[in-house]
Length: 68
Length: 190
Image (cartoon, rainbow over all chains, first blue to last red):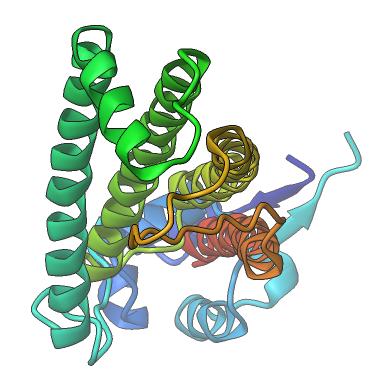
């Protein structure tokens, strides 16, 4: 997949668990797992905004485009 | 997976309940008609002479034995039409059930609608040729005896509304395919 989701790294940097993030952004753990494993087909701006707010990052820190 | 059921499309919605009831009734009527016509066709070799004798009371010229063959062919076509109708009813019932479950936009429903469309087209074609045979049978039987109350005319033509129905069903099947694609996309959206 060309777009890689760096959620694992951001969670590690912020010392936060996926469950904790799920509670803070009000998204189910199952959906966040789909996002983390790169199985999501699309992402809403509201989701991106909530994750960036809670993890104090920019969208570019979360989503990375791989040339390969 | 659970889906949100919008008001007016609950499984107990009056329209859905009525549709389901009508489809179940139609299914049993079709099954009864298939059984009746099949029984009639199976017993035709033993009853056709009595049938031709009855026809000779109505028509001026006594019917030729070939008339029984034509009648058998028309009955066989009737069975094919009824089987196609049953096929369409069963698929429509499953679509109605999926609407009740709140998840109508699935690829299987697109396939079901396409199947109903093809069945409707086949019904149109078989009905057209059946009507031609019926018309031929009436021509073969000839004039009705004076004083006998018998009138029958068969219009062998392609039905415009039938063709429109086929087009509608096939286009609707594509709409359902696209709806299923959109639903899948939405399910992968976080």
